[in-house]
Length: 288
Image 1: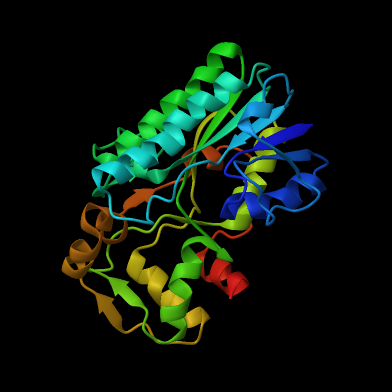
Image 2 (image 1 turned 90 degrees about the horizontal axis):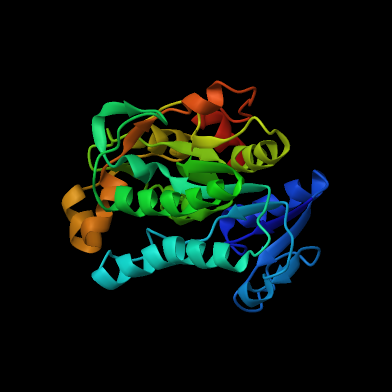
């Protein structure tokens, strides 16, 4: 089976290629320019080269980093274009439609509400993160009209060697880690290996379809995460970053740090999928 991967130079994709190869799939990376960090065994292709190519599976991981910059009007436009507009262009270039589409989204789809527990069937709240994810998911759903089995996975914070954990590592190693705001905001998370295992499983098993919350079954707060990460590194977690400081530095984007969602993987728990890293302590022990 030939698998096209977008967001091909990203954190998830770089961890995914070895598992795809081990499963016997041929990986093809969609690139914009030469990217030497992609493994040599992965074929590279550009958007303009897509027409006429035949892929069994498309894994759409594209999208500018939502937490990289303040959410100015131009940045919000970039975030939309890199997901929604790109996905529309991608599908227009795929003149031969795939059998399966796996399209990324995020738990930001639900908005923020500390009083609710969000499953895949829950009514979301509003806000920018919801609008962004909902528009992306709606664009991805168009391939269903062509008979494509479509899986949309809403990611929590993905923990691995890279990504969000890499940005947090230095202050925690220096003993400067700790709570953000009250630390009581929920922190939906998942180990990178379980993300990649889910993607391979969803390709192989035709029963997978629809929406999935890609989060670990253990729900924790940001304060509990900070304590667990500090413990894994044998460091204290004494410092608190006040919400007013983050709001001053990051503006509206600070909500990603100071707010959260209690998200449960209900759809996954109804399948035979088993998390290899179901608890934050086990996941961080593996990663440190």
